[in-house]
Image 1 (spheres, rainbow, N blue to C red):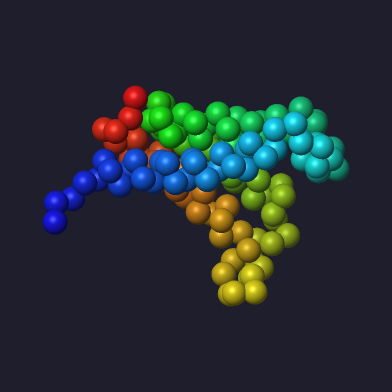
Image 2: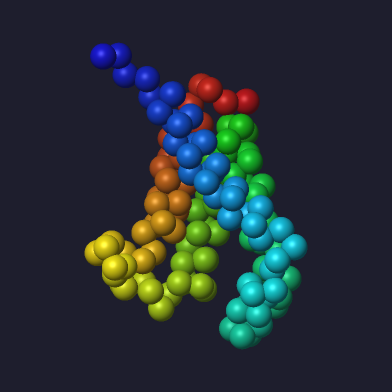
Length: 125
């Protein structure tokens, strides 16, 4: 069977970024919890708006394949920030089924990191 790396990269882009869009859209106008968490850490609340960059703008760019490497790097660092700011208590915790509780964040982060190193492939703008 012939290898089609570009189709695989398209599927990865649509999957990783498309699924993250649901998280970003759900947060439109609902940043109070994130703002509270940031102020509790002594950080300015306006940083919460970075969620829109990480979870809406970067995924849209990744899906269409425009500036994929840059968007993927932003997405990766957003996931790392979310990991340490919101999920650091669960870093090594296991779920009821035996997986890491943070495995979804890790999948998003390392999927984005993969796209940073590979680029978008030929099926992109």
